[in-house]
Length: 470
Image 1 (cartoon, one colour):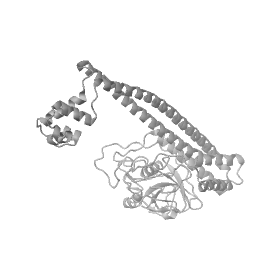
Image 2: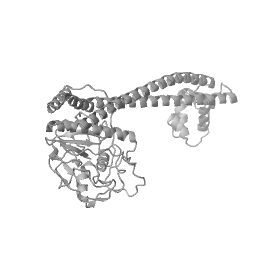
Image 3: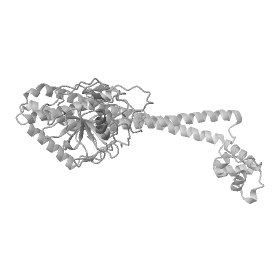
């Protein structure tokens, strides 16, 4: 999916985003610090006020826990994620620069060693450059065949061209030595070994100083990146603790609005924990053909599916969700074992697990999340916009009614509440985590432009999309 304009409160950043069924078309710019706009600030204030109103009558301790967890979800953790990623990029760039300078230093030191060996053999006054040009002059005067070297040095294609370009008509009779001297001066390459050795030693001194400075900078950048990552993890640990505390006290909530507010805040925190788990597991499925769109199974696939992150515990579905899905019982997780090829009376299309989907894409997350919920999902559902039609062809129930666990399909170029537009080529797919009392849906989703994998957001016009159920 491609995000055009909208900054999203939560675990997302406003950046170019591409999401395809089997492609990874990534051109995401480096994160940049940016000031919060007045509209963003007002939206946050409004959201905070709405949340407080939903918690009217709730004990101060429990209300504070919910509000603090919401602030971690919406503000502190996203800011820390951006800071950690920026610091990591800076550290990688500093390290790369230091390594490049070190390589240049090593090359210069090797040049010095080679030149010193040549001086031992034939002396320090021998002019290699002039000798090389003298050989070209000899070849030109002696009528040798066309030389690539001549073409490189003087843009000549024949020996005659070389002579004509390097000498005036009156100087054609000069000796080979004079012709060589003229050529060397023209090319500004004449330098004896003693002079060249001095220049190399001077360059080595400069590179040593530069390499030392860059190594120190790289070490400092790495230290700062580690500090940012530690700070982020501390916030996430705090979020986990508050979420666990909230879950243990939910029974104290008596109003529907307070229960819904707590559920939404807890689910957002859970989605961030999945992102953290995914990053730490290093087990993301990777497609070796990241630059190709997924449209049909590749019979030449010769790699094993990479394991998905360890499934997170499925949240208890909200039985008050509006609508339904053909009578399916969502009070318990689905009944499809991970990787099932046949479930709920039809072929699931699962042949190679999630290995066919590129890392961090929306389709990979939809596959992983559906598998976590023990719901059927195929390996070659196509790009995000293709999931509904592919699912119908395989026998899945597909309709316009959202429900927990359903894959939410965004058509190509589909406008979403006037805030952003699904990619015109690939569309988008997400997973419904909750259907709220007002009919909006909380979704989890992947995509290369999001700051985290998965990310989350709330979609208001839920009836405008197709949903793949079982």
